[in-house]
Length: 448
Image (cartoon, rainbow, N blue to C red; front, side, top):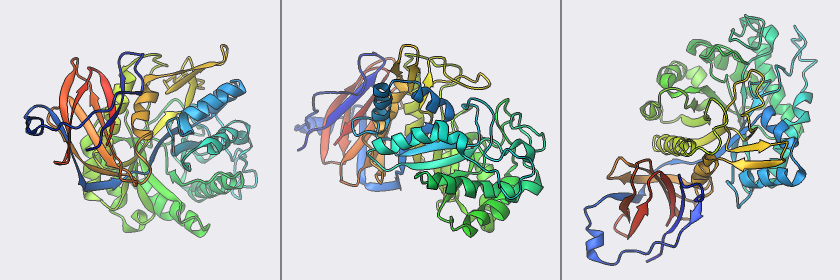
């Protein structure tokens, strides 16, 4: 029987995606009947198809990348997109500014320009688009790109500002929908295909940075009467529309309002989720069970409150969230900023956060954080088109998920957040049984 290849990362900073000696099958009957801890995999039972992993292109990430020497820029790109890196394939970009921009801006700055005569993505051409194009050129897997607005232009809003919430004024709903169309076409002219759009980043959050509020009913109506028809009439009906794009806590009721309206729901590909606040993994499954024809996509998560350089807790948070989201029918997982500086910025309102790679433009180097390796335990091994398969552990301390790639290779990721090592048997449905040992606070990917 075949051997099992294992890659491991742990709280020990010297152990990052380290390949171990292959695990050999247990040939004795005692091992096969062992009643000790185990992780069970049954590949005949399949679930959702995986559509990819990735991170976000932001103006902040792009300007930090541009500040680095050419050879270090290449290192960053290879780390994320090349075959020897994390092989990202599903990424996000902001429409207009977000907090991880150098300041507020929109692509339609002229007040009252209902014909979009002044529409321009020149600002994006300075940093964002060169960064995306460089990633496309490096990528092993084709890149899907999801576009998300943090705020409409200030003059379309009830508060007259891009920051601080406010609402889209009804008289501007149609012209705002046309901005999505124009954005998609403008990026296409730059050689960048937009796969989908979200209606609004975090529509229930009044933030001190770029933000805009929608009730569930307002989001439903904007999709039904403005955004969906605008895309369809422009020949862009293939563009995926993702609703919610906020935390798991309210996703059941928010998606329920939109999906209950057949005319709005027919335009919607699925729901986007974030991880801030309580975990509520159960809500992801509830939404799938209620509307199995709609997808769920993780669209943003990061470690808040600064860069958190060198911390292992980042890795465990990422691995736990990815495992539990995927186990509840999520089809893809998109991290937040691809790259930030050592302060966790730049951010035009001081909302500093961590990123999997942090750069020091002064010293002209980069540092890989534990979150980078945690994502890599999934993105490097689980191919686009893989299917999640049945997988369960006998200990709550072992959190696990398993997949079968299009080529038939089986991938199982296991997280041990406990303070002690755990010995267990990895079982492939009566076909393979191997003994494994996962150190305390470690992540392992097993390739069968």
